[in-house]
Amino acid sequence: QVQLVESGGGLVQTGDSLRLSCAASGRTFSSFGMGWFRQAPGKERNFVAGISWGGGSRAYADSVKGRFTISRDNAKNTLYLQMNSLKPEDTAVYYCAAALNGRASVPITGYTYWGQGTQVTVSS
Figure 1: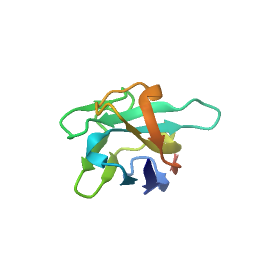
Figure 2: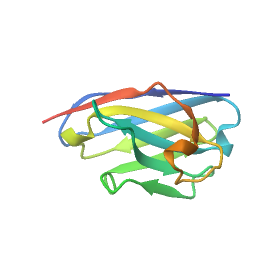
Figure 3: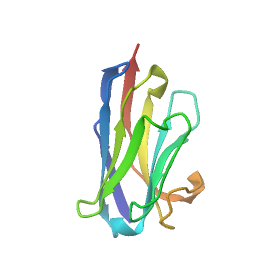
Figure 4: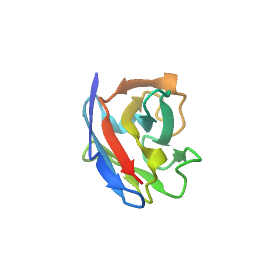
């Protein structure tokens, strides 16, 4: 089992920055591919960013490329998402997730463990 707990969400204005964190406990964090997803009200959950087990490979949704950066600190069992130049359309609940195969780009069905989510709201 892996437990994932997100933090760092909040209410910000357009153009602001936020850094989300995801603290992991349980099985070896460094063996998992990790991802960030988001879900807006009434919409499906979508991929935002992914990172491989060692951090050497990263993947991003087109909508966040150049604005968001995913990173991980395996010594601290923590995943991060640095979000810059935030837009109202980034408003959603953000979830971190862990995939057993260790890759950066994994179909949503490949993620086995999920956090409870953290709300990000960007006002215009």
